[in-house]
Length: 619
Image 1 (tube, rainbow, N blue to C red):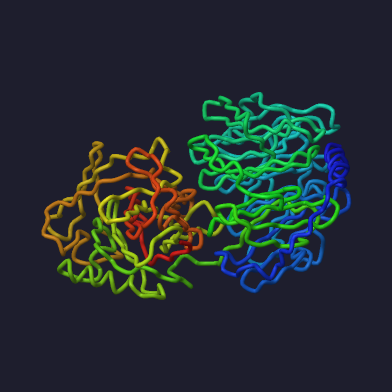
Image 2: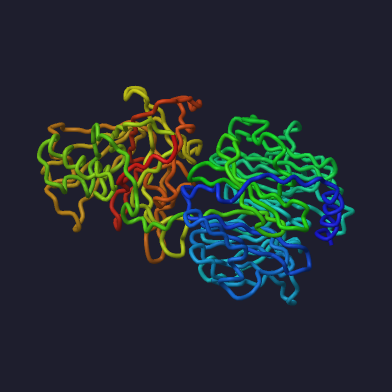
């Protein structure tokens, strides 16, 4: 079997490497990591039933080497290859046990153990997992992909992929699997299979570099692929890109064994099992260029075996397998590559990490810190929440909004920006770098990380309050995003009637009144203007009618009131000018948010972004 063959090779080479003893005590871990803790999956040794799941609680500085065994009274299984989070659940793929273990991210307790077997009861050898619209897709070494419903945890159907898929990702409504080849270690694979999700059948197989492995997609739908070359462990290691037209671009100067993509930055490492040399670099996926070719300085790392990024503060975590037979470590580096701390002896062959963020219901501003210093202006579009405060003039309405948003504890409530284009401008006493915007987005039960009540707003930043730059979110390059959108709302007559609008794309409609909000008008009464015109970017519609509810999908990242508060993190490094070019900003003290989806539904009314506070995470 290929697993056994590779491990024997690895142990032969790794046993010759000198071990270094760095004085890196766990007591140096700062509890303020923007996350409650980190789960660390440890693969274990093949055929020894030694896989484990460790957990480090940051605030308590408490380490549990095998929280799965402690919470469930049994072992995780034999050879755990992959771990991904979907909503409030962690899915762990255990190859030689033939299972996918579903674990509650809050407690570490097993929710369901899903056997991954064929009709004859034989282990399919699941290897990796990806998610799309309530379904989990598991690539298996019997050359299949299984579809699992994430509500019932039942396998719904299976389809054929390529030979021994060892990586999986989803982009543009397609499943991509990297086909590594025969398991006897003598014949490497060199293809990627593309499976159409609606029909759930393979539609194409394309040639790539030998022994393809890790796959991940950027926000434009391009799929990046790391290939390992020969089974001898000496490469060549290759990074390639597959675009939407299924064309291949190779980056011959970049050696890649494994990587992750966060906010369109790829964090890539390579370890050569023969030369025992490793490198870590960062790569801009949209510009297709190396950002830092020597991201981790020095020789602190021995044998990198997994990589992840804490999206709350930008820290990069690298799992180090060490000798592959003893317990490994996890190193943490900041977003510039500087060493921060080490979590020692986490388990045998640590290979994946997931961050448990503080739970927030999304219904308000639970446990927030609010750094807003001033509400500079407030210009909402018409909407069902507009005018409920009863203010008849602008000064009174602005003061009402200030009373809500300037509470230091962030518990003052929420301010609605109304329908598309409505905005608010905020000022700060200290510069912004990374920050969290609080709203009331939340996911429906059973649709975690898909959506529920998500009303995305575009975020703009400025150093002087005059020149504004958009923070590029996941939908920036979506063909359905309209960057030159303009809408005009007309004062109704009588004042309590529905509010009509027209746009510069030939569209027209109404902000309709409903029975739940009975203020005199949805049009702002504190203005004498007969029309209100807003300009900006219109994001794609994000609504979907379900059998029992209307769901507003969450976009992947980059928008206010789009994800639960703990996940709503922004970085000024994402600022772009009107042409989409990156802009370097150093002293951002102004923030503007505007409603960015022009969508109406009879059940929920208009989509309107809500704001409840801003927390500065990192300067």
